[in-house]
Image (cartoon, rainbow, N blue to C red; front, side, top):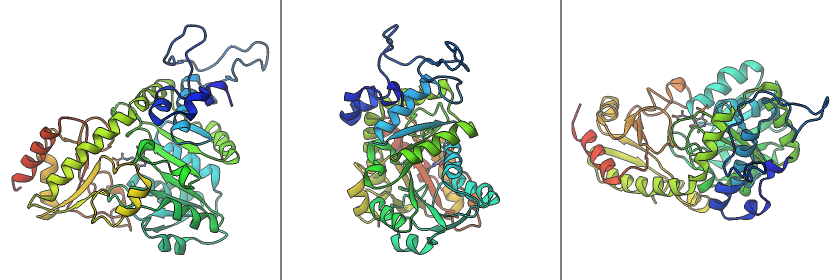
Length: 394
Ligand code: P1T
């Protein structure tokens, strides 16, 4: 591993925010630049055949800006190695092909990002990988879905997208390991600031860095962090062999975003808590879903494994799908759009938007469901916007 991949030794052991700002990169010895340059280069001059400077040969295989990001996110997740990809789904596909073979079986969540389920159901299945779905909040159901000797991965999101169910990472890791499978946790909703699955026994963390890691809705990216060197080798080989890498500019944007992850997440959480309180008191809201609520079935587990409960809030509205669509369309400060985790608040209708691809499957979501990505604007403006959007009947 290069010097940069490990970053500054002290930064690795420091507090979260110090690691977020320093890990993965040391000021450039030639210029002192405190921020890694965007190395917009496809190839590198060799000092004689095979005489590589810093191990760099070709930018699919390695690029210093990407290396800085990979070292940083590995330090934040307390993993052995990080890998940056062109999107969350590219990271997922690379991971599956690195760790599974045709004929294997994986357990996937029965509530997850629709695109993740579509990847397993429409792409990996055609490659020969079978899957069964189980509720991540039900450890016994996950155990029952495992096929001993065939299941190579147990795949979990926690909190899930969009229903914010909570999986007990420690218990799920034990169940996966008992059966000789690895536990993969998609940590996109929590971000490494709120939860570090590798420290709880997970083997691989997946991120759509498009979301909280990038944090500004200006980049699409993905990442994997692993804690085992053998898994790292397989993932590294496939990252290069499959080629869905993060480019240098995208890597730079995600790295810049990560530096402020801690302060952003705290404000996302503060604002989400106020939004939850407001929605819980609104007569047209039939259910508020947030792991921070005591009545949430995953509250105790979330309190144990998460620092706070995050910036995502889902709720169901009286009046069914038409009213839910109306709320989405009437909101103004909350922008109607897919994605999440940026500084600006977003609102969406999962059934028609992010989860349209799972209609008719085990993963279908309620039609009266609205999902919020609560941003870091002035919270009173967010509450007034929701009040206006909910107030008028369609
Ligand atoms: O969009 P991409 O960067 O490829 O990441 C896919 C992905 C993976 N995992 C989770 C938990 C996700 O939420 C996503 C993407 N989700 C959305 C675009 C969304 O609006 O829910």
